[in-house]
Structure formats: C-alpha cells, structure tokens
Image (cartoon, rainbow, N blue to C red; front, side, top):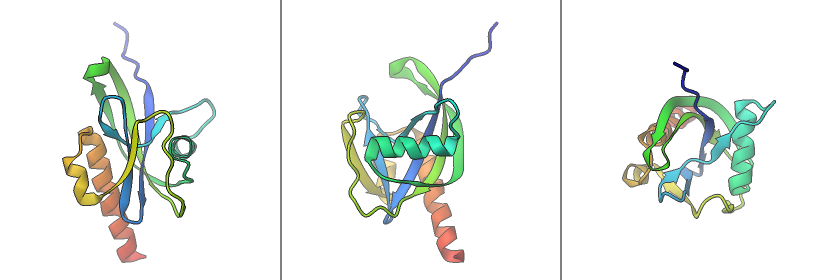
Length: 138
C-alpha cells in the first residue's frame, strides 16, 4: 500500500499592533495567510511571499510555531500545515487579494469565537504568548 502524500501549506501568524491578520475563505472559515511552497523556496521565503501576495504587506518571519495534518472534510482533502510567527512594521492597511472574500485583524481575545481550524487557533495563541515573552525579556 502506498504511503499517503499530502500537499504542504506554509501559513503565517502575522501580528501587527496587537492584532492578528486573518482571511476568510470560500468555506466561510477564517484562516491564516499562506500557501504552497514553490521549488527552490525556503518555508520562510514562502510565507513572506504568500503574505505579500494575499495582503500587500511585507512580513518579517520570526520562527516556526507548529505543524499538523489537517483534514478538510468539505473539500475531501488532507493538507500538512506548518505555521510561522510573523510581524510587520508596515504602516499601510492590508489589501484583500482575489483569493479570499474578507480580510480582518482581530484582538487575541476575539480569536476563540471565530470559525477556523483549532490548529490555527493554537498557533495564534502560541505566537501571542511568545511575543509577550519577547517583550518582557527584550
């Protein structure tokens, strides 16, 4: 029996001014910006490129946060997700691309009530925790 092969999606938890940037997809779920890695690209380059393509923002990719296998039942597919913590000093507002139907920035305490995969919520919480630690020590 053949081993399963899953597409890899590199996602960024982009926090600016204490708010996380999220995009809403065609399934009416909120998700992190990101996408598939291209040949010759590092995961960090991928997530920075995807954030720029999907939001118009330049992101600073800091560190890997989490990874998991996500089953998208409605689409009948399974994806291997890797998340990275990101920041951006960009002052401009993010711009919605044609890939999603809505873009918004949420405070940490608003995330729990959003329709999104639990893995994304876990990554968002981990990055907010890490940013607090960095602020306290830096």
